[in-house]
Image 1 (cartoon, rainbow, N blue to C red):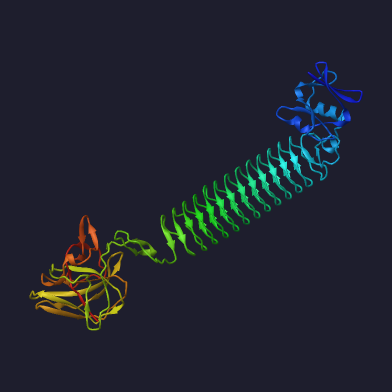
Image 2: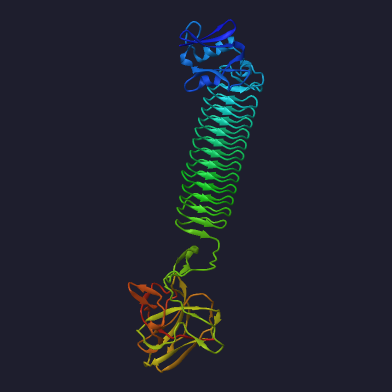
Length: 508
């Protein structure tokens, strides 16, 4: 064993009776921090030359005093204070009066000499400031005033009245910020609280994160209570969904549905699971799952639907012939016309147009009482003077009527016009006076009802575009079979058919 003792005013060190070092005791100082290494060391250096001039280094466990009693950390410090140039008032720097630091009363931490700080935790450190307390094991306060690092391995960079209570939690600075659980982080700002584990507040004012693994980047008076949820910033926003709720910013927004998202805006509520609001104001997904809102003052009323105030498409790529239409409550639905739209350029006055696309004329033989219609969509708004058909094969006593219906969901709906009987006992043009306005882009259903089996000029099924498909068969028109002259006010449920469609001319 190595014995350290004072002999005739000098430090004498011997190893099993053999003297290995003699040095004036007042020139010797100890390195107190080395006593707290994983293997405590007794380190003595020349205080006049600095800590790099070690004259003795041995494991403390190998050292004994003059009575052969093994040293402990505390008894070795007592020996140095009593006999060497060690001065507790100067922080253990071997009598040097220039160090601004000292050990705390328990010799367990390091703190400034001035400022009424208390590094009471084992191996805790306070770098500066005043009235700070670092009571957690291995805790640190860089500076500032009146802050407390309670948690083990917790850190406060600076600021005022900050409190780092969770183990391994961190507060960068600011004022009146609090971390309450393990691995929580507050970067700065004022009056922010990260109260659960693995939570983060970047900064801002009066923000609160109450669920684990959640984040508020900044802003003011924002609140997160959902796990793994995020608020980017803004004012008075709340991410309360059970999990994965997100608010980018804005004011007074609430993301209460799991996996819900609000980009920004104000007074929006995303209450449906997986629902989203881009922005705007006073929108509500109304607990509808996967509902999306783009606009203002919209309340969702169905799941898996996107709601907008208005929609403008500036370009549309080809989509295999698909088409859409606006249905009840603004719902966009597939148009079962499958591209079968007959559009027309407005002719000069006195000329005629029909509801077909290609001019391949054929003959259609009627079926008794059948009311047969096909779609007509004008490219420009027009007003007719009359409508006509052409009887190609007469049948004595037979008649026909021309009818026009409105459109609903791609099928004929409400009767808009019904002509008087057109006599088919002779061939030729049969005209009905009809002053009707056809609005550009609006779908109308135009056709005739046969009283018998007379024939009229038509366009063959190969000359028109299919309006629907049934299995592998194309349908070119719809029909119903009411009593002749009794065309219903509402068309009802039609039957699709693959046939030619009657030529109905429109004269302006």
